[in-house]
Length: 490
Ligand code: BES
Ligand code: MN
Ligand code: ZN
Image (cartoon, rainbow, N blue to C red):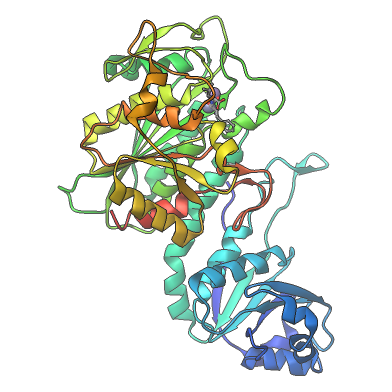
């Protein structure tokens, strides 16, 4: 498992600056002013920092941007990371500054000269979030690579205070990393069994984890979920994770995730080009797991239940066929037009089960559901579908506050005609028009009118081909921060 860098908070020590090893991050205010730490660095470097702050290069830097000054004379440090940031930055700029520092932090030690800057905890959080690399499978001469990260120390005037503010953010970083690892893992490692075992291990941090195996799912009537997994040698499972930090009688909020550990498309086989990316088709389940981890680690005062449907969509002699009709736990029948539209079949049963068993006060599902959402929104925004305007507004606000892109798309009975089947209650695939909307409209059939509900189509944002605001390319952990925030508000 990739764990976030531990960040140490220490008291400012001006006299120690000259001898600091590794890289040293120092802040210059937007107007070019130097704080006490920066003035010290400036003296040691014979005015280099002041010259820089008056230069055109500094003028062109945006707030929170950073620049590397290698081998500063008069200091032991290998390099200075000079950051343009005011003493009282917004949370967003502070976090961004942390991200920029992380990009320039190198392999050795890093000391951040925070001084009396506010929101040093957000700077630290930004460093932790961006300092991620999934390198467990890279070797040097066949041996696991030593990927130990250098120590990160943030020197501030009130270290205890900052450490206290940083603790809940460290829990968020752990949740984000947990999600990213799950999404990045290949499917020969992250099988349904392996995934369930990793979730069960979270009992150690206080989550209540229950694994429903195939025979139980059969008894519950989850035929649409089981039909997706029946072509695979990996057994289908539903895992229920509970965090009960709120009042005993309060109904939980439910988070539901699509956990297709690999999506070949099934008998409606996907083309070879790009199929390897379908290791991330458990991204929804990954986010649910990451949020549950964060809630437990920060001991959130709320009741939340996370449910994930873990299956593998494989072609085989036992696989479901196009044209099959399957019955959901709810009782509605589905004609399987395309075995590659499997996510909605998995979610249909888990959504229904979540409501029948937990009567949740609200429900959000996350799924890498459609390629169409990538056509519509690219990798910048998740598609948001909601049957409740208040919950939707709260979600969009939380996503905005955390810098996670989210854009609302419509649900409407006008699309229902596209779901009509010749022989069953509905069909699972409805052609190219509005592919993400018809998928959401399908899910809505398994949501009770009284349940405030959001569907998040994260196919474009769960894993990205280029770096994002907080993550290197690959798995992003999109949604962990927004949902963690939202869970305190709903
Ligand atoms: N897992 C895919 C959606 C997907 C595509 C996720 C690209 C991430 C990147 C999903 O199961 C799928 O195959 N959807 C089909 C639906 C269609 C057959 C109705 C799609 O989007 O093409
Ligand atoms: Mn598919
Ligand atoms: Zn899929």
